Image (tube, rainbow, N blue to C red; front, side):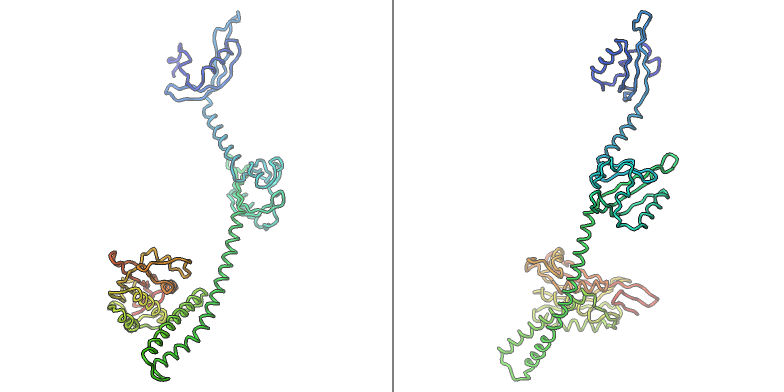
Length: 465
């Protein structure tokens, strides 16, 4: 309001409505008794906004002692009250914080500590004030630790770190602390503030996890050694069994009748399955022990494809399955890699495809994807399996985890193939080819990088022109 707008007007035009009627009655009672009234009011600006002012109202009397006027001296204290409110909130936050908050002078003497300090350390606030935080030193931290901390703070920088401190009762505990310089308006450091959290429980958990991990690794190493020993011990008698069954099948010891031949075929089939299991067992133990080494050999892709097809042709024919094969002419005839393991990965995928395909076909193709990738695909028209089921085929499946017949899928052999592929940094993945019958496709992707002109190298295997 301007002077012209207020002269002659009642002071009620400034009333904000924030004070009750009793407030004004008490004020006027004091003034009418000839006494000075002092207080704070929330008044209203012309634009309707509120402000806080501090007032001193004094009665003016004539010679007869009668009150003729009132003089009010006012000061707008809105900004001051807002600052005080901010300080109050900050003070409450610091006092109620679960973190320990300590403020020290430049010598490190404690000038303030919040209640959390007492709760964590066991020292009362009175015991802490004037003391140096070294009362918490555990003796577990080297002198260099504190030297580096103080060098950082003296340089005006913030320091953060973990330390072992000691409570009043002698108990040790872990703390994560952030200590920062407090600077005045000229940028001069006047105090230090430390905000600290008790991380003892977290440290104990980390230690327990570390111990559990070490125990698990040791158990895994022991298991791998046991698996390797079992595998080696079983392969020798299995070799003898298969050798003698081959001789029996060749009728070296005399002719066999049909019944004997059927039983012998069952023995051979079961022995081969057991041999495959033992081989997988040995492979897994070598993988887990990190003892599996890859060899670089020249591999003829046409010969590899032919060998793989011949190896499963009889199995496919026994189930009435059609076998299809394709070799991309854009691929080189020769690649360099570990022929044994490359063949084994692909053979495993082919065997799984035949095992879980009742009718239709199984396909094998070698193709170039682009300048940087080539792939081997094994496809089938079997029942397939949902991608989410793949998570169930860990090398150690959970007890009771089962898959229904329509979702039958590769298990241990698939996982070994995948782990062998990962060792080569090769991507082995699967997907459904059709939503109607959900057949599956297993695909190995190799990536190669141009090393020199006319020299192409994959992570393993690699090929060159």
